[in-house]
Image (cartoon, rainbow, N blue to C red):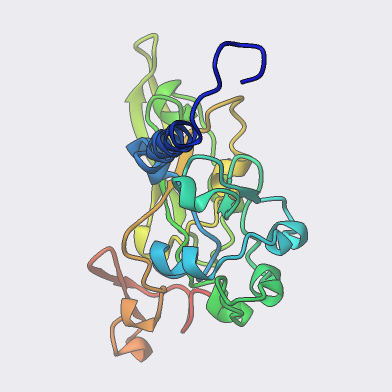
Length: 243
């Protein structure tokens, strides 16, 4: 270092740089569990290791995303995941009738799926936050997430219940709940939540990203039955809930 004492030997400079790089890499690699839980990859993306090998960080998917849902990862995916695309539901959602990100991906890190298959691709699963969601936290009716859920048979539904409000009065309340077997994690529920700041419902990554397929339903579809959350129920959506 010129003008600041004797010059450090090149070897020490090199070792110091390598050590600093190791520490920096470690700070990214050992990411917080909550950051990893929100590591939502584009629809159809395979296992994380495979996705990282294929993705060239070109940004084409982010450019074509209709809702601005795809943003470059900074620390969520470790140093190896920097600038790879992540779905950020509070800023945008995966449009039900769009598959542009897969069409423009040059390496098939995001597979080019037909829209009918992309709809079934699991990005994550929505989870209600009872400390923020209006019907739970404030005893106030709100079904915005249910209204916007694009699944024809609705992955988000509501039930009418009677509860005591904060003043001890009995009220009739519509409380939302998730039909997990029908949720593809598109994120529109989190995006449209009317709360400022933290949403009352959030999408979290899941290990099992098996596409939502017909095996969710019993073989005798002609009998008008469907398998939902492990229970056989009346099938109100004809043959395909994703038509």
